[in-house]
Amino acid sequence: MSSEKLIGVILPRIGADIFSRIIEGITQELKKYGYNIVLANTKEKEEEELKYLDIFQKENISGIIFFPFSITENHIKTLNNMKKPVVVLGREASKIRTSYVTYDDYFSAKEVVEYLISKGHKKIAYIGVSGNMSVQNLRRDGYIDALLENNLSVKNRYQVIGKFDVKSGYTAMKKILALEEKPTAVFAALDSLAFGAMRAIYEAGYKVPEDFSIVGIDDMETSSYYIPSLTSIKYNYKFSGESAAKLIIEKIENKNTMNKKIVISYELKERESVKDIN
Image (cartoon, rainbow, N blue to C red; front, top):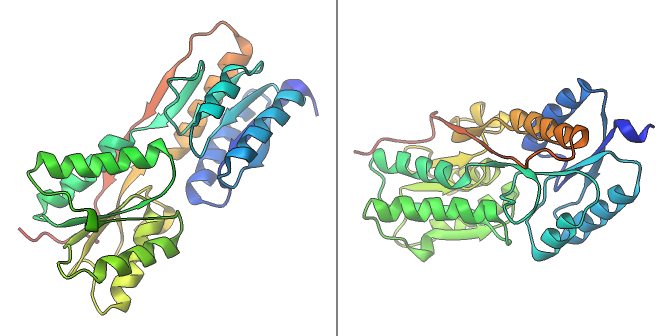
């Protein structure tokens, strides 16, 4: 394979719905320029991310599109010393001297919580994920600020942090259901967490949205087919992949090109999982 026609793509996970859409966007755009990809799955581990950055730096790769699980000081140091063109995808990368594509995580989270508030909900729980990740911090901040700006109290007991999978959403919701003063709505930072939460709600003898309203972020393909269908924030993940591919081509073809920041917009997809209790 020619070194001039390969782009390294580093992702934290491969199987998730959003990453399949991102890869579709990347490959579709790169194909226009005759490039193929070499894909690396880091399994959300920093050491694997740094390892693949080093491997792709040494191999016959023309450029790298990197979607980090989080950005640490090690990432910043490594990326700022890279000799090959790199584009960061999915994370705020202002400390890194390169172009990057990110998502409007704070305002999307804030808007979906404000949507719940507009439907009369004052007791809103949050299910998030652990880790030093700007994306999850931004989504939690959006949740908190939406409550505060609407003169609603922020309760620690309403915030449960887990992992990325459906099981974590299920476990988190069981903790919320055990509370004496239960919320009327739940904001899950990921659709996968929302699905787990919905399962826990049904097992406990409650219904969505009659007893609990629930919203998510990501608008996974299954979100519109779930019963009830899930109200969620939709990002154009395919477009984000296309955008990252265009940026890496620019860097390969013109090393003096200015670094760019692209923020992917969002859309609130209103479905069946929220009850108006006004």
